[in-house]
Length: 219
Image (cartoon, rainbow, N blue to C red; front, side, top):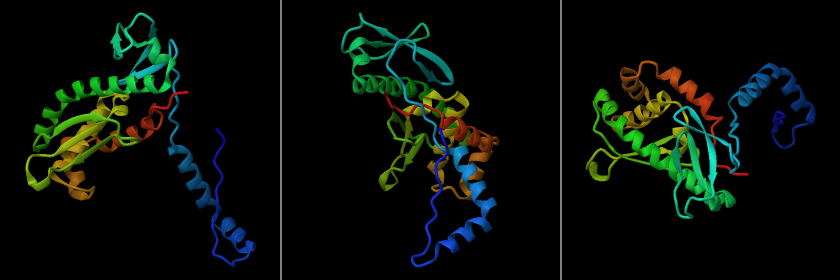
């Protein structure tokens, strides 16, 4: 994929020569920022609903299998290392995507429930209610309860569960820190750091791997 162009916006009425002089004087800064943008831009690949397409779950890869004998209303299942999709779902991109996202939500919800209590105990926070759903491009979200009743609601994005377990744990711990501290100030990072001293390394790994994950596009 070719690099995206850089556009310079100059104040109205300024001559083009001034803009050119600015770019020349700040050539190194522009090059550094452009390189940083290229390193961090999303590379999320689309998927095809065909036999053998690769999908990830908790860091492992699984092949898609189209099963013409599966009932039309059957959900996706992981069987013997294969994700089973019925023929009607494979033939309809919208239905196929919905079925796969539903499977990630179900599988992720079941797995995350076993991780929430140990992390909440480690961090000394109340255990919130948990759901896994489509959060768009977000990995997680925490919403406090209204009226200070209960510990609030943690939501994890289905796409998170493509990543290795230690990165899912990072997002779980990150959102749990919000049970006690809103925002991302020093108190937040201190709390997270006490429970997960290597959080900076995991955050950097999430940024790098996350931009390469499938986010639901079907071609």
